[in-house]
Length: 309
Ligand SMILES: [Ca+2]
Image 1: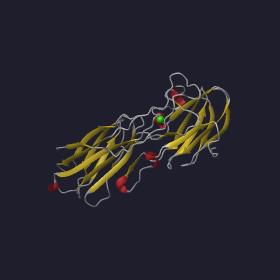
Image 2: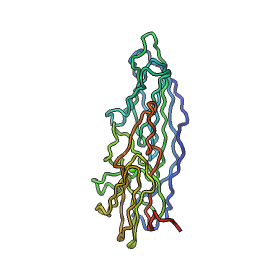
Image 3: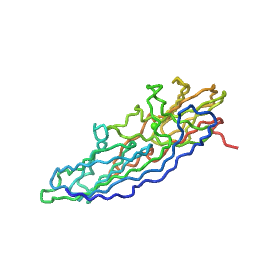
């Protein structure tokens, strides 16, 4: 096969994360981090090649930029009918495939297969592009073009992962947040294997705050992706659960007021229902809401649901 490879600008849309002033209302524990803004990285390729014979499989690989929040990849393959394209995206673990899909057959020409799937920072995917042996021998070589585009989702709090059962290592990467500010992050988690399990470290987001005096606190999600059911839990400094609330799918949660004594507290926002991790756009599936919609939350010293002054 002879490949032509072109770099192109991705479909990335620019987002900005909520900046947190470094001057915190309460003292942050030593060594803890706050929001770290970064610019989204654009990445993608367009590759044209041919299958020389039926069943031919061409192998490729790509590496997602190391943007801490990760994002998603849209991969697309186009060929002339009746050749039927298939692709496999093999995640870092090498176990299983992110997608193995083909358009309906017989379909229109060109035959297009387009998928989207969540990716972690810096992940490398092996790619297989193959012909489904639909065309007659005389039709070869059959040209095809495939592409991938990375859509970065800026999350200035990532990486802030950890499994609750690993306490205290759980909160080693926790991010310190300010009071009374609307904060924004994404609940994307990339494919390390075929699935994105709900109970893996990288499916959790950890935050913390420290109180110098007894304070009434509200914890709330202000908006969440429509396809996720997000759990909000507050822990004390040694990992004891103080508060725990699971909203309905797509609905926000408010906990408070709760009178908390001085000390450091940790909380996590975790999708108990994650939504789809990959979809086939060329089959009419839509991008899952959590691919493009962040969740917004607040740690408030006043009722965040009441009208402001
Ligand atoms: Ca996280």
